[in-house]
Length: 308
Ligand code: KMH
Ligand code: ZN
Image (cartoon, rainbow, N blue to C red; front, side, top):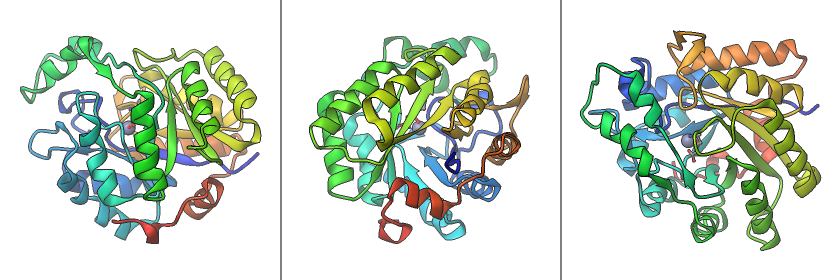
């Protein structure tokens, strides 16, 4: 089996500060968490930004540049900037920072969907910031927009023009066919790095049968031109990424996807989750890929060719 790439998604735009005191919000918290995750074995760092004043998801390039250079100085991990941002942002807002930073890697969400966060609101009694409750509760009428035109624009602006390669976020089987469509249009070229996303309310459920089915269809559509990784939300994170490691896939952890380190116990930082999945995959006999091995496997342009 190939070496296994560990991705760490440091803060994201799903969880809010009232859910965990350990959610990285300020530039320094994001830097320390990212570097700690890299030191624990993460070869790729998947990065969103937040307003340091209140922890709200931010698309502001200033917020991204408040941590990207320092992370780059302190570790050699691949910097992967989200083009998903938050479902509340316009596409232009979501692309502002990655167009400026010209990273080696960006996420690319392969379909429009519901992105229902509101069930989490019911579990919070003490709100730290006034934006949190309406942000979560308003997601019952929120569309995470990723039309074919949006996808083509991201591929052109960040891939063709700026040399980024992609973490293709596939939340359902249909997204695999959309990715195949862009391969057929000549806008996407291998090696493909496909992130199977499980457990987002609006995407495919976190059932093991869905992982084997997504892999079956991806094998059929992409053959040996792809490798897959798995992320799963909340309590499903470790079981499903472990299953991915068993099936020869890569893994993604991080506080973007789950705030927990074990049942009922909050993770104090991202490195704890990276260390946990590293222990598991090494016990399974997998060898963790270095940052350079990840770059070679995914045909990335190199850290010296970014705008960071
Ligand atoms: N938040 C994850 C479920 C992105 O940033 O582009 C998927 C994700 C999307 O990370
Ligand atoms: Zn993300």
